Image (cartoon, rainbow, N blue to C red; front, side):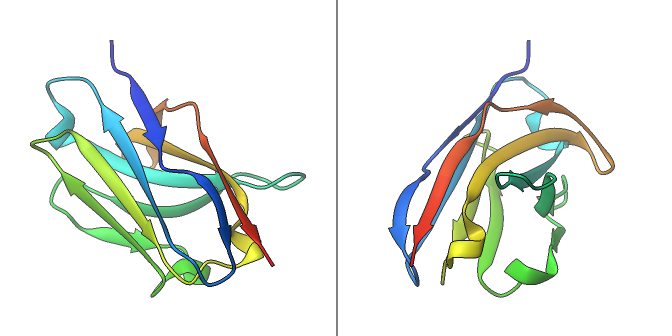
Length: 116
């Protein structure tokens, strides 16, 4: 059974950085696309960034240039490096795996809070 476990969330001041990790189980991890999503209170879930099996990346416009998604297939882990954080980045961050447009495996989420 595939499981995704996020870690690395926390409280940071405006302008600070965090690195989120998404550790996966499963022998076919390298074939999956992985996405990071976030959901702030009272708002819909938003796609933040994706990385496919070839390493091709896509970013939501508001995070482009500040966030970097990467993967280490030997560790079955996907990372989201977040720099220049601001209060609008406050949300629960989730990772999901599957294929682009069909992420069907989800982690439990990790809270990111950016104080002003």
